Length: 80
Image (cartoon, rainbow, N blue to C red):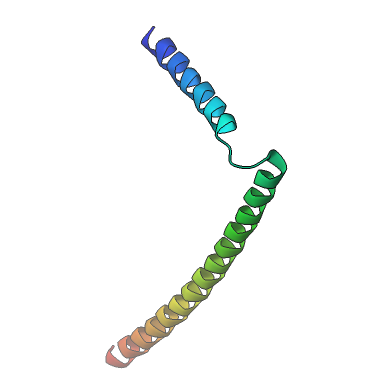
């Protein structure tokens, strides 16, 4: 019973928000879609750049750790 009321309440809020969004939209649909697409493309470009930077950083860290492991192994072999 409570779950049904909750779902109905959420659906009503979603419908009310949609109606308010349409009534208060500052621009026509075509212009709004263009703006959304432009922002989405910028977002994707930013994410791609961040992903590349992250990959480069991980490669540097992996190289550093490999060098440390080799140095530690060599040091252990000298002591053993």
